[in-house]
Every structure is written in structure tokens, then in C-alpha cells.
Length: 264
Image (tube, rainbow, N blue to C red; front, side, top):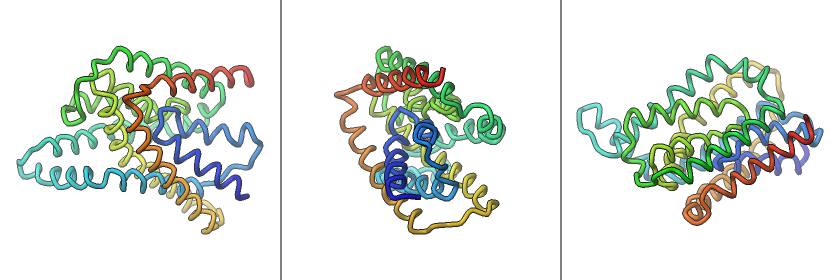
């Protein structure tokens, strides 16, 4: 891979993974629109590892408290952090099941620019509606089993390219009455097991392939993706109360319309 390819693809993965605009859609569109060769499984593993490291570092204190509280809950000692930890577990189950059952179908039939255009517009407008209509009174520690299951089912829809895992989980959170910041934080915490599961699946495919490993390329991709993802999480949460979801909705709708114009 050329240096410009490494830098651009790493930054795209790092920035779009946690914004409600779909990282998978952008990584699919880059080679389609530029004619660049596919980046390969090894590079996908590297940039996913970078974004996973970013969210682990950023939420290290919360994740440590949740882990300790989650283990303590097995002995009957429940707390707000324990409920949040199990909510993350509950919210992960639907996407794992959906990914296991539908991965092949999605990769064969739904990775097209027109599918991305449709999901970008439809789920973008749904995000705007949730942001405007949501009550925004609850924080992430109030999430119960039913809430977690609903957000988890929504997250499973993000397997369709263009939907955006971050976008659809924030949409569901806002619909359930979470504040913007709480919806974003729960979405980011929910990304941890999802990114781990995704990384395991891609790594499995990589092990089965004969693809050569360029360690320098992978290392640079992981570092760039991690740094950009960390900065993205920080800025997104900090600016969310001022900007709301409208800038991301505008971007999604504009992207969808451009794709319709090019590929219809």
C-alpha cells in the first residue's frame, strides 16, 4: 500500500468508527470511488485494533469500575456500574447472533453504493427525529434490561453498510430518553465487545488466507486509527451538547444524494 492510502484509510476508520456516519460505508466507498485496490484483511485487523485501543484508553476508568462491579454482581452485590456492565453485555448479544447468521448474505448482497445511499439517508433522518423528539432526561446508568435489548437489536441493524453502528445505537438511546451525552457514552461502551468480536472474526479470516503481512504498514495504520479515534471520541462528546446531531444528519443525507446521483 502507498503511504497516502495508509494514512487516508486509517484516518477514515478512526474518525468514522465513532461518529454516526458509518465507518464500513466509507471504507467500502473509498476503493469504489478512487479505484484503489482493496486494503486487505490484515489492514482491517490493524485499524480495528487501533480504534479498539482508543476506546479502551478513553474509557479506562469507567471500564475498570464496570468490570469490578460486574464480577461483584455475580455474588449478589449490585450497583449502578454493575447494571451498566450487564447492559453492555445484553446489548451485544443481538449483533453477535445477527453477525453469525447474516455475515455471508450481507457481504454478498448489501455492500453496494445504492444500499449505502439508502441507509445513509433513512437512518440519518431517523437520527434527526430521535434527537428532536427524545426527552433527553436519563443517563446511561438508568439503562435497564429492556432498554439494553432494544439498543442491541438496533445495533444489529448496523451490519447493513451505511447504517452506522454509532448512529443507530445513539438513535435508539435518544428514543429511550437518554441525553445526547449518555446515548453517546453507552454507544462507545457498547463498541468494546463489538469491536473485539469483529476483530476476532476478521483475524480468523486472515489466518485462513495466504495474505502476506506487512508489519510496518499495519503498525502505522493501527497508530493513526487509534490517535484519530481517541481525538474523535473526545471532541464528539465535548461538542455534542452544542451541535446536536444535525451536522451528521446533513452529511449523511448529502452523501446519500451524491451516491444516488453517481450510481443510480
